[in-house]
Picture 1 (tube, one colour):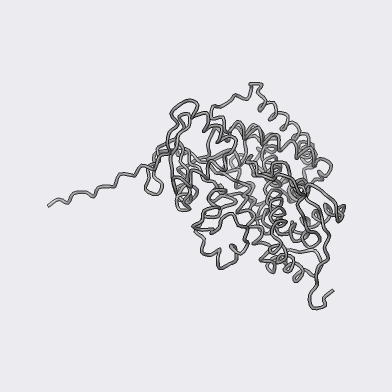
Picture 2 (picture 1 turned 180 degrees about the vertical axis):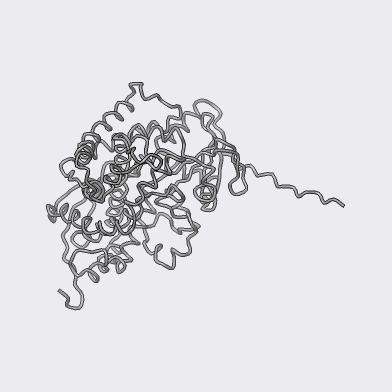
Amino acid sequence: MTTAPALTPKPQEAPFAPMPVTVSDKLARLRRLRHDPLSYLLSLREEFGDLAYFQLWGLRSMMLSNPEHIHEVLVKKSHLFVRARTQTQIIGRLVGQSVLTTDGEFWRRQRKLLQPAFHHKRIAGYGAVMVDHALKQAAGWQSGQTLDIAHEMMAVTLGIVAETLFGADVSGTVDQVGQAAEMGQRAVTEQSFMFIPIPFWLPTRQNREMRRARKALDSVLMPIISERRKAQQDTGDLLSTLLLSVDDEDPTKRMSDEQVRNEAMTMFLAGHETTANALSWTWYLLAQHPAVEAKLHEELDRVLAGRSPTLEDLPQLPYTEMVIKESMRLYPPAWIITRVAKEDTTIGGYRVPKGTITIASPYVSHRDPRYFPEPEKFDPERFCKENEEHLPRDAYMPFGDGPHICIGNMFAMLEARLILATLASRFQMRLVPGQKIEPVPLIALRPRDGIQVQLQSRSPQVPDGRD
């Protein structure tokens, strides 16, 4: 007797968000997605739950809010999903073809090449440089002074990236780099939400701004590359790795100046932007939560007793790390992750046709009350060891996950903890009244117009009579 083969269940269709019917409805949805994407994506999760399809101008998209679904796309089935080509092409107009904007064999080769510069042993050697730059930035601060803490954090992290990864001093170009980076990111973001690709040769405002930003950034970075190319010395940093690398198949072939520039530019921008934004939002949150700030100060005073932190102190500063993690929960620097299905597949048993754009938003996922009760509350205790162990993987993903996880995640966390410990030991920040502070979702999640604070010097409360 022949046994009939088991039938494979047909994949389910995911819930579909209501389709806009009229042209005006479609334009309204497009405007909302372009001008307020954070609330738009939150509304999809709140209305449709873990997963919802929606279409806009013929683009089939799939919003993922369940950690298991996100894990399938980013990790388990990462080979079936690629970065959205249109988006990487737009970002590539600013940074070029690099590890950030490619997939496949080229990406694997470049990622392998860059990895040694971010090995944990090499990163550990950067600690003293990070603390030194924080101290230099604060050397001119005075109690009662008002300043834009977002700008100050950009200056600190830019100097750290330039010295640790490129062996250079760019202290005189902070404003130039900051303005160019913001202008370039804004142009990239605006074009990304147009859905209809705009050729780069067209003289649109965004294209003109992209070119100006690229030219300004190149004027800072290219002289550094040129000088180091001439020196032909291995100083052990990322730029040396790039300049001295050879092709696996042809040892006589080295990376071109253009490719060196592309990878260097990617690390130059991403390497300071992520940590600077995380720290800016951290100061913003601490200024509004004195009890959290007091607990942070107690830990810093008890462990450091007024001295600057070192790498060896970090295991004794768990609350400092918890504060950083909770800040990145509420304001994750990378607020959206998109992938495109290379072929028909399924996610969580739901059908995902080839070409579907999957969207995972750390900003949305980090506000899921199933895993973060009272999600808008700033509560670093969420990340104590006991609580963190119960979080499902990818419920919290400030650096992404899978093969494309941020290559500099350990660098960024080390930097953020050391800078926060260095500066919070010496200063408190108080928000200047009357300002409207809101996140603007560019490539990274920035405070729209900076964060104006008034500095207050503090003296460490050294316990038990320690000096």
